[in-house]
Image (cartoon, rainbow, N blue to C red):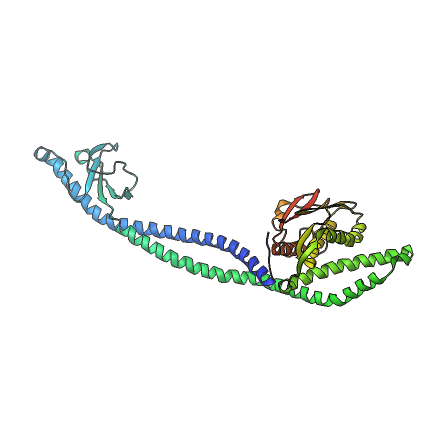
Length: 397
C-alpha cells in the first residue's frame, strides 16, 4: 500500500520508483558496457604482453634447439637432454608423444603458439629438422603476474570513474525524462485545486435547497425529478469533498473523539441509498450496535463514503452490497466487476484508475489509505474478476 501525505511527497515517491527502475536498468547496461570494454582491454593487454614475451621465448627456443642439435650430433659425447635453469622445456614427436620434459604444466595446447596456463607462459616452436625425433619444442617460463596487477588496477580505476560518470549522466537524463510527468501532475493538481474552489458555492446552494424541500408534499413525477437532482448533488458533493480532502489533507487538524461507528455507518448507508437505487443495488447490513472508535468524524465518514461509493460505482445492476461491522472490523463487499491481482498491487495509488467506463479521478482509495495510515487502520482487499470485491478495515481494540 502506498500512503502519501501531500502532493510533493506523492511526486517524490512516484519519482523515486521511476528513478529506481530506470537506475537499475541503466546501471545494468552501464555495467555490461564497462564489463565488455574491460574484458576487451584485458585481452588486448594480455596479447600485448605475450607478444613482448614471444621475442624472449623465441631466443630461448633457438638456444634450446641449438643444444638439441648439438646433442643430436654428439649424442655419444653428452648422452643427456639439455636443461636450462631460467626456463623449462620439452620436446614431442610428430605424434605429439612426449620425448623429454621439465615442464610443470602437462597439458600442452599444440594449436597455439604462445599462451598462459596455470600461471606459466608457454611457447611452441617447430624445429626445421627432426633433431632427436623432435617435432615440437615447448619453452615454459613463469608468468610474473606484474602485467596482470597493473592491468587490474587500471581496469578498476577507470571502470569506477566511468561508472560514476555514467551514473551522474544517467541521473540528469532521468530528471529530464521525469520532468514532463512532474509537470503533468502539477498541472492536474492545480486543476483540482481550482475545481474545488469553484464547486464550493454551487454545491452548498444545491444541497441546502434540496434539504429544505418537503418531498412528501410533491407529486410522484416532480418527486422523481427532485430525487435525480438529489442524486446528482450528492455525487458532486462526494467528489468535491474528496478533492478538498486531497488538497488540504496536510493542513487539516484532526478533531478526534470517541464516535459511535455503528450510527455513522448507518447514516452513510442511508445517504448513499438514493445513488444505489439507480442501479437497483440492495444493501445487506450486519452492523453490531455501539461500536466505538476514537477518530475524527469527518475523516472516518470520508473513509466509509469512498468505500461505499466504490462498491456502488463498480457493482452490477441489481447487485448487492454487504456491510458488516463488529468489534474490530468493518467489511464492505460488493458483487461487481472485481479486479485482477496486478491491479490490486496499485489500488491505493493516487490517480490510479482501472476501469475507464466509470467516472472519477482515481483518488478515492488514495484518501482511504491516507486516513487509514493516520489512525493505524489495516486495510485488506480481496477481489476476483466478475465476482466482486471485499474491503476490510481492521483496527485494534
